[in-house]
Image (tube, rainbow, N blue to C red; front, side, top):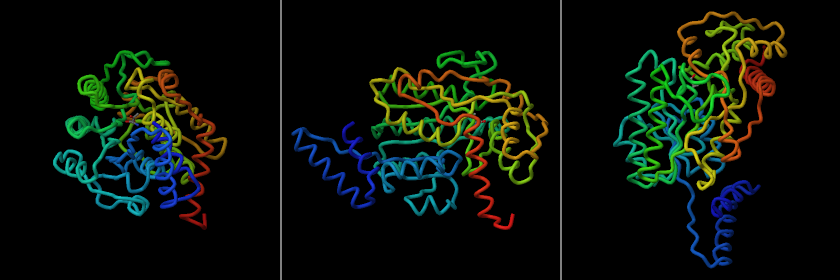
Amino acid sequence: MITTFLWNATLDHPLNGYSAKFLWLFMTHWYYHLTNSSVEITVPKILVTGALGQIGSELVPMLRKKYGNENVIATDIRPNPPIFITNTGIYEILDVLDDARLEELIQKYEITHVYHLAGILSATGEKFPQKAWDLNINSLFSVLELGRKYGFKRIFWPSSIAAFGPTTPKDNTPNDTILQPNTMYGVTKVSGELLLEYYWYKYGLDTRCMRLPGIISSETPCGGGTTDYAVEIFYEAIKHKKYTCFVGPETKLPMMYMPDLLNSIMMLMEADNSKLKHHVFNITAMSFTAQELVSEIQKHIPDFTAEYKPDFRQSIADSWPRSIDDSAAREEWGWKHEFGLQEMTKDMIEKLEKKTKILNPKR
Ligand code: AKB
């Protein structure tokens, strides 16, 4: 713990690069002599799968800032990563179903921590259920097996509100409750949660997991999910001042803004093991209906209009909770959100308008 503290202290220090590292070495050296104890100086060596996705492309820069560029290996199946990923650290092409390649990278970079983000989301999962099972579960199984073999210190895997189903209580859904999803994505999330728990109890592998609500972000577009409407609507409101929503106006789901999500992942992964009673946590920041989101956007863009044409994603949304209880996360590792509907909407519109102006200065 003390080494993590020292590492964080040096990286937060205004000095950068070599100066920060020198300071870190000096501080750990000093601590060693002061306590006369054998300090294990361990900096995490992190591998992120699915690093170019909606979450990965914002999590990788944050992890690099915190743990050092050279200690965070970004991987994804895509051959053309954006420059902000390649300029700041190592990028490796990885199909997470290729066990041999995954093991090669783990050996090559002496990986200690994995953030396993590669996966297929709910709407795509309903179109290709076999593929969703294969990718979501078989890749997780490989990561866990390699974690056992190479003694990983920690594994993060995102579950989802999709782990709940039509028989789950819909409002303020408890952390420990009925898990009977009726989507393949949900089936993979429940199975994955059970696998993580199994590896924890059976092998002592430190696995940590959160059930993510819909994630709203301004940097990387999302794709293949049911909650995508809550992101698309902002892009369309700014570009065309109208949006056709694929769920009805009364559809209410738990949501979170990306800065809160990034913060929560960092907090969970840094949490003191002895305080954790769970390994799978509900996590949320707000719940709103599609109509409430439209009204909030109209406060900033008064001529924005929305119409509703529910498609197959409506029944997926209807099977999920309207709001979830994340008190276990708040009690066990101090989770606290910053962004509610109003703050998130204001920030999204400001960020997207700024980006639009940079891309089209004449608009
Ligand atoms: C999806 O809509 O599939 C995801 C999720 C809630 O897990 N955003």
